[in-house]
Length: 522
Image 1 (tube, rainbow, N blue to C red):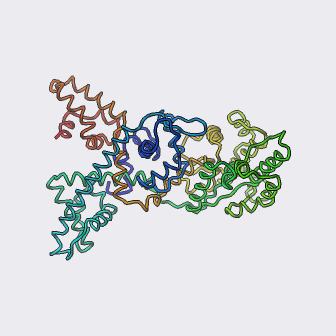
Image 2 (cartoon, one colour):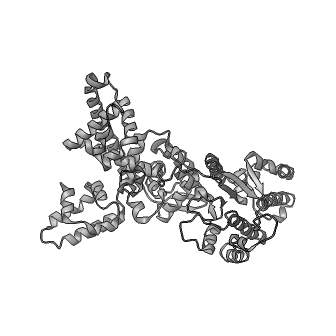
Image 3 (cartoon, one colour):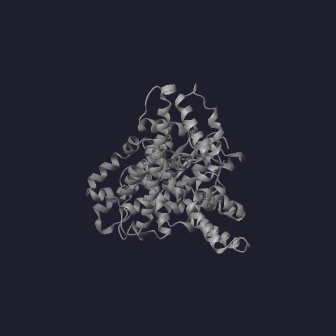
């Protein structure tokens, strides 16, 4: 495993990902729980902006979109940590004990890091007369150590003899840092165990913050995103503050990834009709129909104010660089003539409409027809092909309607890993943010490493399976009750060694031998 991009196959991914096959969001949940516990009490409404700020300021999750937190909050609701009511999330259980545990972990990680830097500083300053010609401050050493870890740190964990290949001619500081680590390794000092833990934290921080997959930095190429009607209203800041914030963050991330934003003509028309209906509601308040527009409500827009928005509606699109386009035709040459080879691009609009009518609630026929037309258009733009990578999928429809996403997946029977025709705005924002290595660029690396180690904790399933294994060993004649009790404590006292032994996979617990437990106990 010399390739550093193979990090995702190491035990550092943590058991929660390996066993439950969750996405990187699962690794972030401990930090979200910690942030909630530090800021809110039982019964409090959890403010999403406060959590985003705390995560950025204290734990290094730079610029986390609200959509990522919304997804996290939904998972925590299913686990009875939060309760969803009145369009918000409320803390359901006391998190003070969990926060205290994490505080101790962070304090210990900081203490261990400080001891490593202190020992390394003393070592390097002993070399100044022969090689380095100057004294270094601990701050300078910390910066050099970080740089070393980011380029060579993986070998500390996987192949330490590789550090011998670093020459003083190549980089004098790196050479002496490597020699220091090698010396601590051979002496089996506690400082080396701290260095090992720092490197493990580094690997895990890369998984959480930057290495979503081995092609995390792959660029988007000729991909266009087509947005639905409700999302357009949010992008124009016409809906609630929270909806508008989520939409603006998505737009920012899309532009940062050089992804073009477009909308189909029928979605533009639908936006126009919604705003127009709002105007008629003002003129005839006794016969209100259609959806409300929160921004207009807040500013008490008059009918003439709304009419002004309608006159300038296309300018809203231009200001946000959203291109209005017609839906494509099946005809390959644009003549309108459809040949046999064109049929593979057809999704089956009649069948899709019938399926959606049973699975998704629609207020009128126009809404379902527009969705069918949008989904069909994406299928045509992709020429009926499937794509494994979102960076190359050509076209993607983004909607705020989660039911529409699930129903369409069911219709297409897409159970594979291919990129879907449409995706929710929350899913897309989360995916793009998790793929962005720059989101933690302004946060101290060692602080990130210390924070990341929170996620090295074994899951409850691993603890349960491990205890069962110990119960099996009690049938062995050499395993006394006292020895079994000592083995049970290993899940707490030597958890990192145990996680490495089973490669963070509960299925490997069955392979543990008594000799393994004895080795861990030493």
